[in-house]
Image (cartoon, rainbow, N blue to C red):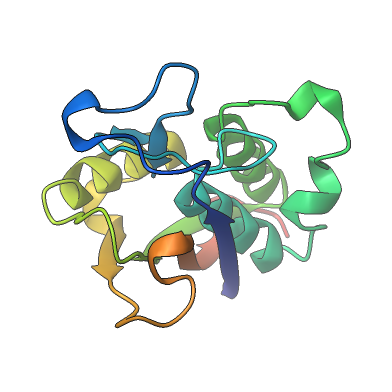
Length: 172
């Protein structure tokens, strides 16, 4: 068995939009776990800034001893400008399988004071399970607040832990 831990954090982009107006034109939507969350602010980052998928991808890469997300998909590379973070998770999952491993489970936590995520966790769990080609029961997505500590209302952080097991028929 192998275990990997991933972490990511991004600031919100720009000032909050007026509550009645929703997201301002030209502002990036908030994506978490491959799901678009209705909120007045998105996250700043080179890609789509999906902190949850970044944490999952880094956990997968860490479990197989591969270079981290920043090394494999650097923000200095224009190919990844506004990239869909699902592609990073798919690449990490393919690397895991090439190395002869199967995903046992994913346990992830989103750390955010806003927005409230209680109604979105099941959708994130399903989206992540589809990306990883595992059952939703193998994915846990939790949401916690910071109680006023960093990143507080300035952004969102995420942590993920993955357990890998040898794939059936693996000769490694």
